[in-house]
Amino acid sequence: MDAYERVMELAKRRGFIWGSLELYGGVAGLYDYGPLGCTLKHNIENMWRRVYCTEEGFYEIETSTIGLEEVFSASGHLSCFTDPMTTCSACGESFRADHLLNGVVERPDALSSDELGRLLVHHAIRCPACGCALSDVEEFNLMFETHIGPGRGRIGYLRPETAQGIFTNFDRLYRFFREKLPFGVVQIGRSFRNEISPRQGVIRLREFSQAELELFVLPDQKTHPNFERFAELSLPLYSQQAQERGEVETMTLGEAVERGVIASELLAYHIGLCWTFLTRIGLDASRIRFRQHLPDEMAHYAADCWDAEVLLERFGWVEVVGIADRTNYDLSAHERESGKQLRVFVEYETPRRRRVVEVVPDMSQLGPMLRERAGAAAEVLSSLTPEQVKEAEKEGMLRIEVEGEMLELPPSVVSIREREEEVRGEYVTPHVIEPSYGIDRIVYALLEHSLYEEEVEGEKRTVLRLSPQLAPIPMAVLPLMDKPPLVEVARSITKRLRSVGMRCEYDEGGFIGRRYRRFDEVGTPFCITVDYESLEDGTVTIRERDSMRQIRVPHRKLEHVMHNLVLGIWQFDEVVEELGEGSA
Image 1 (tube, rainbow, N blue to C red):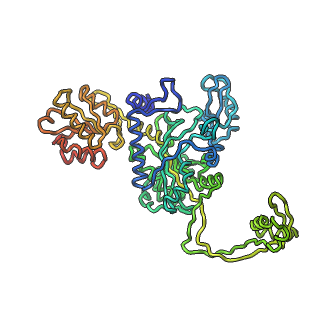
Image 2: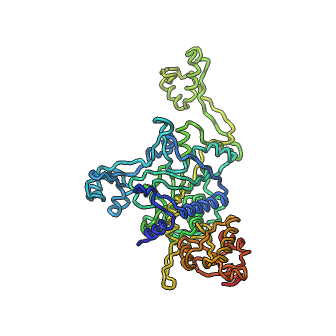
Image 3: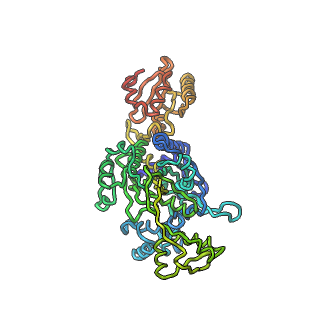
């Protein structure tokens, strides 16, 4: 078995991940989280909240998973959110056309539908399922369409990303943040993409969880006040230039900004923050890199984008986070579509003087000339530029449209006037920096990076090396044997630990060694064993999963010790050093 098969076998058997709707044959691209998987996923999301909400100070909102057609027309998803599709003429199976050319041509995902169609014919690519001919390539929109209200109702779509709900709430958020930039808003929730043929297990899903930050900044903001935190952090960067050479460069983020590899401190800071989160949850640092999108793969809304990619045995380098500079694309698009202003007023440090050249209608001429239409004509004339007036003067006639009728007026009905005015500020459309995390891919990557197998005393030992803060079962209480005195003490300890808010499992079935192995396999960092010595001196054994070392502590101190171990305040080595291995 390769790593994916080992992970999924464990995930299905121990209740981490199951195929959705298996009772009815299942559906590709849909998966359910079992009891342990659901807890692990929530722990990852809560760690993300700790980094972005608690430590960085961003607020979280929750918006509807259904959006109106107008929202996704403005965002570009209705026109741009497509994949190339081809269908078998015999069996009716559909495929991503570019995926069929992987390994045949270089970067098929950058080709147009017409180019893909020609290459499929040229290379005699046929249906992988039955070997028959394939149809022409067409663009397939990945949006799930629905209707809001009875009958046909209003057209709506399940959201393909969580971001749009934040953009459509911008005016309220701007007031909440007391009309000051920058400010950031996060959201964790479900998104939906009607993938053509998801054949990569949990890596490519039709329903998935995202954690996104939308950071609204002034258009000219390039620095970050805390960039020093990451300036000396050295990371593997696969820039556009590095991809041309085919080699990853390792450099500090400060150097990357100075050399122009990363466009700004602002973008570099969030690359550093992403690295911090991914390594903090336990992903293998040696299997993480940051790859810059090439120009022909950049999303329609992005000026620049870097992906955090993790190395997986079966799938190679897989994107788990995208960190994009979305410029002012989204707010400008929603402003045009909705007709409502989504700009902010920025005051200058000191007022500025500017010269204004304007066209001024002469009402003394327009009134007698046009009577009741004079006001409407004056409004049209005021919108003309001085250049248009000068051109009309050359022709000797000024032509304008008023209430659907073309009028010809003498140029003398307007004059060009210059004046100076004081300007205290200007309206600008904020830009957006967006780190977008694919939570489901991170869950899988963490399972693969954490799964180890080793030989212990001639037996295979499977260990899921999850951190205490993320493990679905951070601790287990085990009586040495299923005997009433031991069971009574063990159940009492379990009740005490749960009463102070600690997630704790109790297990009394089978040999103690097998129970240790069961909890090793699901990632439980600490097992607390009650033995006969516990009945004599009031101590219990704490066993650490990875090293299998043990210490004895008085069970009256157990809440304090376990609290510090699970939160990562204490390391097990520090407890061993203080108490002595195996001692009380």
